[in-house]
Structure formats: structure tokens, C-alpha cells
Image 1 (cartoon, rainbow, N blue to C red):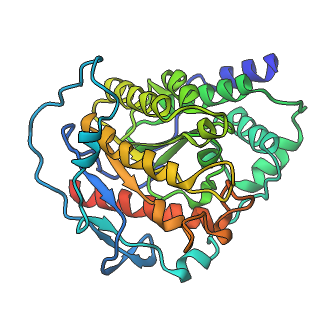
Image 2 (cartoon, rainbow, N blue to C red):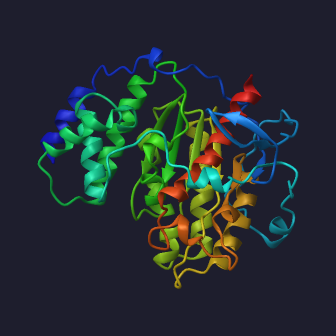
Amino acid sequence: MRDPYLLAAGLLTGLAIPASALPHLSIVLPESSRFLWDLKQGSQTIVSTKIIKSVDLSLPELSGQAFQPLKSSQPIVSEKNVSSVPEFSSQGLAAPTESLINASAQATSLLLTSGNQLYYQRLAALKTGQIYTRVDSDNLQSLWESIKKRQLTYDDWKSLLALEARAMAQGQGANHLSILVGDSLSMWFPREKLPAGKLWLNQGISGDTSSGVLKRLGAFSATRPDVIYIMAGINDLRKGATDETILRNYRRIVRRLRQAHPQAQIIVQSILPTRLPKISNSRIRHINIQLTVIAKQEGANYLNIYSWFTDMEGNLRPELTTDGLHLSQEGYDVWRTALQQIEYKLTQREN
């Protein structure tokens, strides 16, 4: 893979994504902004030409005080901190309606059947000097088929994501940017379902853990994101990591992102439920409660969408998953609804 990487890297030099290609949004909030998002019922409004339940989120007044990092000796999460998590029951986003969940996306993309296929599509897009989230599906179809393929490794994916981040840093211009950081749930987020009106950089890798995410944050440190969405931890649970390890890594992830991107809104997303017998959803809920505390302590935001994905038994809803863990197209429609409302709310806050 050395030659394809060198070719892609060479083509990235001088890459520019025209600012005229995207609407210009202003969504950066003050650095000291901190609040918790819990998704609730609200009134209706029109967002991105779709009628969805709107953001019912009254943002608290900002304190104006500079963020003070915690001392390294402080416990990850104490029982006292957990019990003092504020309840923002009146500040939330509205759950997606069934009609929205079942509606098919207006934009269609090439059916992907494997991680290898997704990888080579993205590499093919880089060879054209673009990010795959901005390339027409028909062009990707012919490009990826022309590349010699082989079995991929974790390092291959890390290199590809670093190249995409470099391309974005060079070509972002005045456009606004959101970044998805995480594992396969983020990696497989359909590009046509990402909220329109800005650039998106996907930094998800299949099978990655919170530790792996922590180690590769530097890959996109040169970008200028307005929002960074984090979701990781499910693979930690599959591999036997302790709650303490997951929470410690999350705290370090948020701190490093805060240091590298002081103007960005960092959003810790709740870990989603599963239908896997070996992973306890009650344990996931417990971790999510502590993630709210970490987000608050570290000057980040918390986005709670866990309940959107659960059935009556508290498991991942069967229609929202393909295998009990990964999301179906309907599952990504649910997630998309949350991102649309967050992006819309941030834009309205700035305006």
C-alpha cells in the first residue's frame, strides 16, 4: 500500500475545497459554553426541508468563567459526583417520529458490503483530491474498482484517516466543519445522512477502543472543527475493559481535544445499547451516567440519545440494528435526527 498512500499524499498538496460549494454557517459558541443535552419532546419546525420534532433546549446562561482543568490526582468519577449530576429534563431535543425513522434518505449511495469496500472508496476519493463525503457516488463506483485491493489492517485505516484529515486541514478554507470520532458505529455513518451545509470528517475505525481513539487524536489536530462528536467504548466492553479504564480514557480524550481545539464544541455522545448477551445494557447505562459527569467537569457537552434506541426491555431496538450491535439504515436515521437538531441549535445560538 505504500504507492497508493504516496500517490494520495502527493495529490493532496494544494488541495482546496471551494468555499462556494457550501453554504456559509456561523455556529461557533463561546469556549466556556457547557450544557447537557437530553432528548425530549418538543414542538415542530422545519429543519433541512424535513418536518421533525424541533430542539426544545433552553440553553443556560454562560458563566463567562474560563475552564479550569481538573488535577490529575482527582478520581475519575466519585459517587458524590454521580449523585449530583443535574437533571435538565426541560432542556432537550425531540425524539424522532416513526415516519422520519422509516423514511428513506433522498440521496442514495453505492451499497457497501464490507469495510474493505468503504476503505478503497475513500482512498479513491483522495486520489481525486477530495474527501469521500463530498464525492459523487457514481464517480466512486468506478474509482474504487480500479484500485488493487488487499486485506486491510488497523494501521491502514489510521493512515487513511490521517490523509483525510490532512486534506481537510488544507482544503477547509472558510467552511465550517464537524468531526465524528469513534469506532465502527461512526465509521459506517452514511455520508448522505450527515447534516448538510458544512464539511464532515469521519474519524471512526471499526473495532477501535477508547484507548485507540485517544492515541490517534493528533491525526486531525491541524483541522479547525466547530463541533467534535465522540462515541466509543462498546469495543472496550467486548474486550473486557473495566469501567474505570473507559472513563479514564474518555476524560483524557476530552482534555486533549479541548487543548487542541479550544474553540470547538466537544460533544460526548451516550454509548448506545446492544442486543448482545455478553454486554450488559445496565452497565452501559451506568457508564453513561458517569460520562455526563466527566463531560460537565471537563467543559464538554453531553448528548443523551440512549433511550432513543431502546425497546421495552431496554435492549437495542431490533429494527435499528443489523446484528445486535451495528446500526441499520433506520438506526442511522435516528442518530441523524439528533445531529440535525444539534447542528441547527448551534447555528441558531450564533445567529
